[in-house]
Image (cartoon, rainbow, N blue to C red; front, side):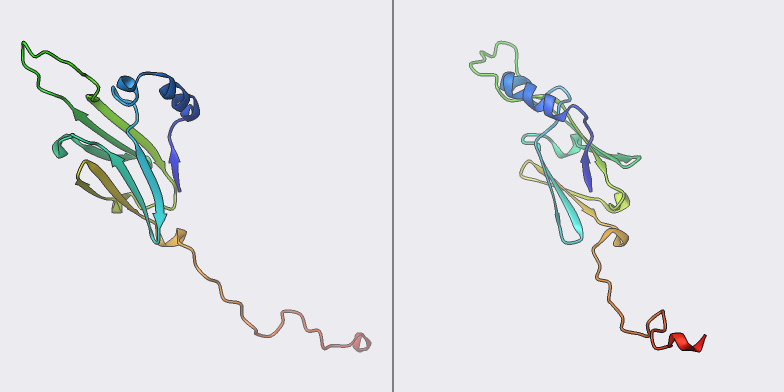
Length: 148
């Protein structure tokens, strides 16, 4: 249903485990994300702490969902920095939407630093029960071989 748009995902994850936290998801690298299906919707949650809502851009092109945002800090000349661990810069995440998702029906909400997307599942892709009928058999099994 929802596909990660990176053939190097495992290599990327391994690299990010071995590099300092400062470069783990800044400068265009992926932001932390959860995605799951609940009922007739796929829910996507992206962590964007400290990002202004007006800096978030969400787009869909050719079934690829792209979320980008920017976070920056205003330091003044003469500031003495003791720690510099919070990520800043441009954040970007792309995922491929499966054929069974309605890209036109996506809704977004940004609350408490978490961007939540609701992606509806198209009716054709939703599970459905197929009933089994008990009508007449397609082959007449009552005819005898002696009629020929």
